[in-house]
Image 1 (cartoon, rainbow, N blue to C red):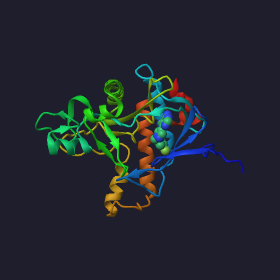
Image 2: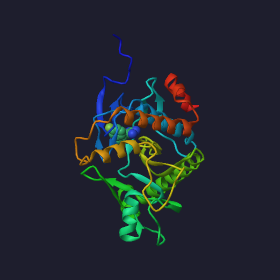
Image 3: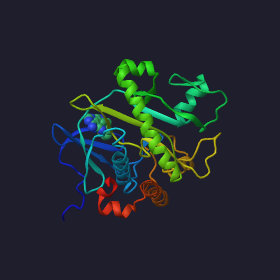
Image 4: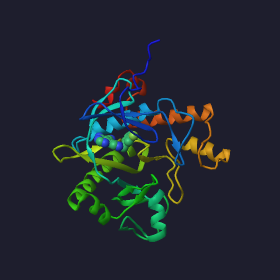
Amino acid sequence: MVPDESSVPHMEHVASGKVRELYALDHERLLLVATDRVSTFDVVLPTEIPDKGRVLTGLSAFWFARTRAICPNHLLAVRPDGRSTECRRLQMLPIECVIRGYLSGSGWRDYRATGEVCGHRLPEGLRESERLREPIFTPATKTASGHDENITRAQAGALVGPARLAEVERLSLALYRFAADRARQCGIIIADTKFEFGQDGDGRLVLGDEALTPDSSRFWPADGYRPGHPQPSFDKQFVRDFCERTGWSKTPPGPELPEPVVAGTRARYVEAFERLTGIAFAAYLADPTVVLR
Ligand code: PZK
């Protein structure tokens, strides 16, 4: 039988992420493959969410196509399988460029402990998940343990140079504002997001990795947004609720997901795709280049 997927590349493997794989096409180009794996509480589950990788690839390509005027990016092509993208090979910067429009996760924890996030002193009395008056740039580094660690602007400046830092801060804020405004009109709050930049052979900054997906961001339903509490995840809430109900210890291995949780989660990913892009997911499956137009 002829395989119906061209998503298993016979290529030099470069790196593995929790749910993505990176291969070398040649000296200048990489193939970034988004799998259907899903992680929660930092653990990859044994059950996949069908088409999750295609939804994330399509969303990322959609944002890359619409933000090219703000910042050039590494996207060269989306493959017909809808889950693989050909990318320019870059020299990646050793920092993660996180933008927070809302106070959640480690931002909320740091604020509660110190009143600051990455050197930004914030007003007193902010509540969990509260919208910030202005989005803030809160860089992080990958630690040996694989967990990200928030760093100050001064620490980030020491890693990439102050001029580079100022440039990625400005670009990250512009990218976040553009996407968060659009998403809000579609009923989705992008609470925060992470960008990774690299430089090309001419030393120009280029946006890499994935951008503005639910795996690189916190997506919340705008409907029912209520500061003062953690917010439900737009995409993974069924998975989290199920994992909490089972009493799982949150250490590997994670639980298998029952079919209704898989189906409900897949539907949420597809809903996010369709709301944000305005494109039927079936149209994306038929021709993934629809997100680039
Ligand atoms: C690159 N990663 C992280 C992401 C993985 C690993 N355009 C690029 N050029 C050079 N290197 C990278 C990229 C990108 N993107 C990204 N590691 C290297 C990563 C996804 C899956 F396995």
